[in-house]
Length: 77
Image (cartoon, rainbow, N blue to C red):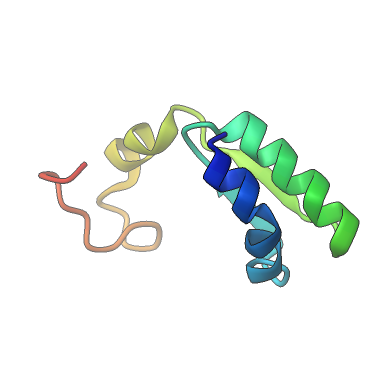
């Protein structure tokens, strides 16, 4: 993960302390591991998952599902 992720992981953990599942993409596996390890030190354990195929694959598959995606714009993604 980038240096900015490492510098911000403590704040991310604080901001998501009440969220039971966090999903990562891009540099997901390493970021998810670091997030989960940090979270388990400071708060209740949570689930950290990696979005298989990345966000682009997720968007292509679910962009028309209003329960999962809103304001999808093909020109951006």
